[in-house]
Image (cartoon, rainbow, N blue to C red; front, side):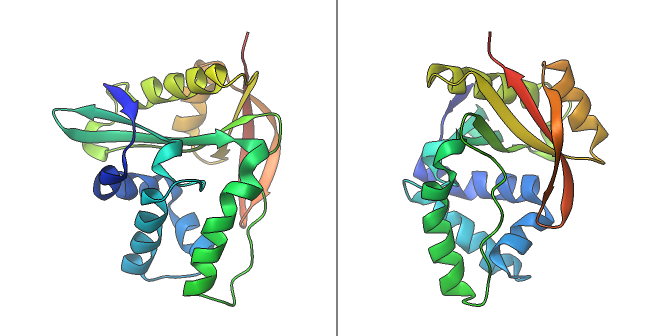
Length: 185
């Protein structure tokens, strides 16, 4: 079952979020301390009105266990949604710089999609992406966007199968990504 996330889901969702982000989580927080990075994202997830909030997250749940998550939001609101994140990471590391924008106005941005490794290959990611598309459509968006690492052939194939096309290439936090879009009909 896919449902809206709740603040109390943090302990199950944050590891999925960090799995999806990989090294980006450490780059964004300017920390190599796993516990500190986990704490930052748990704090953000439990709060409203930020890009990593429960408000911007859907979860796939089976037998009271969260097996997947999708974090998404209006790309035009990134600057506003990122402010609490920047405040939090600047408290943890005042020397950190603000990251580039990975999305833009005019698209509903699928920020992070993750499935528990023990549940992969069962269509959960596909269901979450479809739910993300529907969520964006319900909010009136005609374009759904996401970034996928250029070397992640498995994810690229999934997104293409679901109707996403590569719009352009994007450098973000030192990595190279395909910026993919899905146009709602």
